[in-house]
Length: 104
Image (cartoon, rainbow, N blue to C red; front, side, top):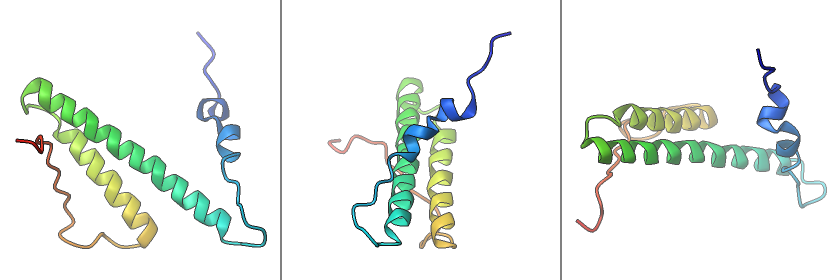
């Protein structure tokens, strides 16, 4: 049995925690601002990855798969909004994503 990678090493926690570098002295909310916005960027990365995978699956299969990835992207977006604003996002609560080529 091979020994697995430990949590801290796998997630590169030491590297991650070095990325929050406030630029202003005596600005108590600057660290919070940095952490919140870096976490948003990471969630956006997940959403974009899911949308790219869904588009690829839809292209390869002609529309037979991809919906699960679209739902994952939508749930990720909704949970990010709810977690940060304490309510569902405005509107109908559904995200409409067009994967059509805009030039068509």
